[in-house]
Length: 263
Image (cartoon, rainbow, N blue to C red; front, side, top):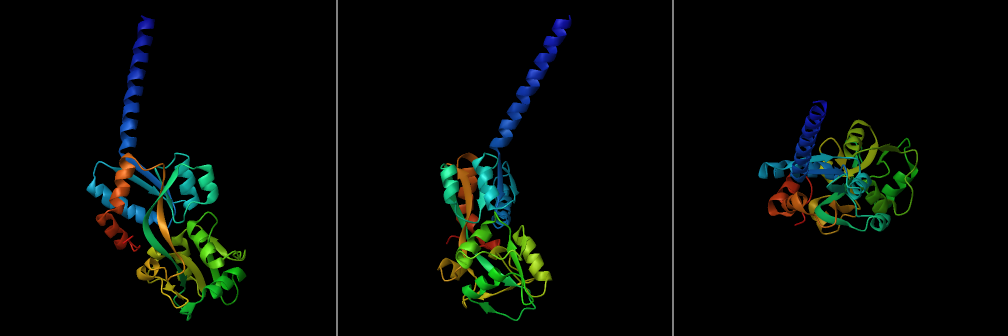
């Protein structure tokens, strides 16, 4: 009798395990987990929201963490799609040769100041000098932290091998920089064009405005692609989602979110 009870319990446990396994497999095939760049994050959220309305059975989870975290999370299988506001680095390509990049939008890295600042334009050389010197009586300098794709684009296209001064304030997201610049007199920083609003003032760089046309034609110096990273060519629901993002409907969402469509 005792043996029968044990067998009955074991059968019940096995049935439950099979049920939970089936549920888990069904859920994972109908969901997409994305994470990484805080520049791409709000865009991915807007696209995911519209995609779920288009495909009610699909579930999406979007989180931040920075471009490097997005690439690593994707490569290690923790994310279905990594979000990156820069291209893959040489060591990432070497370490994870199966990673594939899909461009989903264009973006400008806007140089922003507190609205009280009278300056309207700076050259690349002047911006480089400000960030190389760090905070002074003239400027409170705000930058992204290491691991940020936005910072890496800024370092490549503005700093040109010159280090950002250690007496700069380093913050973890575009939103944090925008808030700090908006609330601090004489503050200067850089953020994704998609984050720009009336709380900060955007400078022209070499008398070229950070806008869609100038980013598309290459006249604005600090522009980049926003990217989805996958292991191999996207498949299944991830493929369907990316195809939606690249469609005419998806690219209209890109524009509505304040970013630049691929055109």
